[in-house]
Image 1 (tube, rainbow, N blue to C red):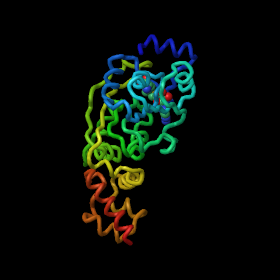
Image 2 (image 1 turned 90 degrees about the vertical axis):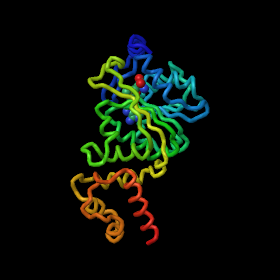
Image 3 (image 1 turned 90 degrees about the horizontal axis):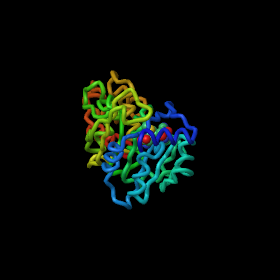
Image 4 (image 1 turned 180 degrees about the vertical axis):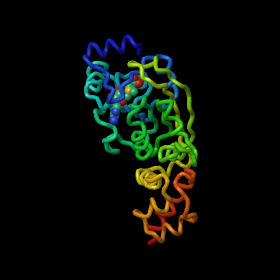
Length: 270
Ligand code: SAM
């Protein structure tokens, strides 16, 4: 999908790109084919795209996969995809962040692909981690400047719930960067494509675990004990948190996973 084609479609559909929905459409065939190739699913695998836009990725993906679904918040783009582009995918016209897991069969999804709307990258990624519990790989375009927050290690200022979830999901690869000229309209920042490949620790990821990690980080400079006190019995916290001075940023992702399992199993034994 070239810049010219994209502009023509927008003009003929009378659509202006909406910055409030993070609409920067991919107009570079090389980037489009590299992203499509990274998905690397089998024809029968359920594939989910967030934010299909004008279908730059959806069109090639729909030729490769029989069970492609795509969630688009913008009704004008949704109408274009359904009525004009006639993309062979299950299209859902909803805000992904408000979509119930059962309404997109989250547990069946094996592959996720998205040129993410940058304004809500973090909540979208957390929702995917919490609900797509059988996802094998995610291919995501993000702002390059967000990558430190995605891949941060403990005791780093960028380390937080997102980096914990990404690390527990599995292996993260920064595949390539994408300059602004590959989009219409041209964004101010550089973008990058990452792949996240499921590993052994991913099974801990669920909305409750993600909520737990968020509670741990609620007040970054507060001790872990104090952040968790309002939510869990003090005797359990005293048993499971050995170092009472510890802060969330000191814990590795695997330690978060163990701490959560310990708390949950002690609560269920009570
Ligand atoms: N996939 C297209 C491409 O690569 O050209 C468009 C990518 S554009 C960066 C982000 C897309 O996500 C837009 O189509 C936008 O309308 C859509 N979007 C933004 N917020 C959304 C949300 N909360 N739920 C679903 N789609 C959303």
